[in-house]
Length: 79
View: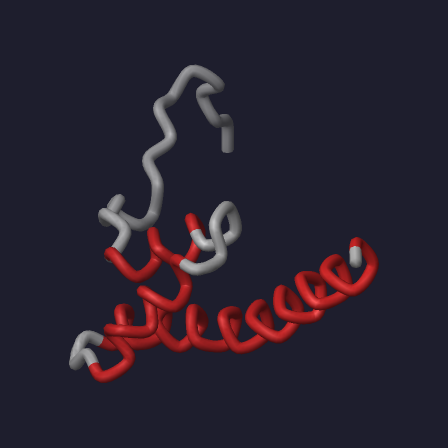
């Protein structure tokens, strides 16, 4: 069975736009407090929004103590 190398390959899944919570999750890696905003949709009925909102919650729970530790360490070091 020969395949034409110039044949256009079509993706198996249609492209869907990202939900707001998915965008917030990824932008949270640049500015982590955005994850806290992303947790607003934790009670959403849409399954995808709820899943990404839970991920935002987990990351914010991890990021907050780490940032507090870093800030306290810097304050104690500089004083």
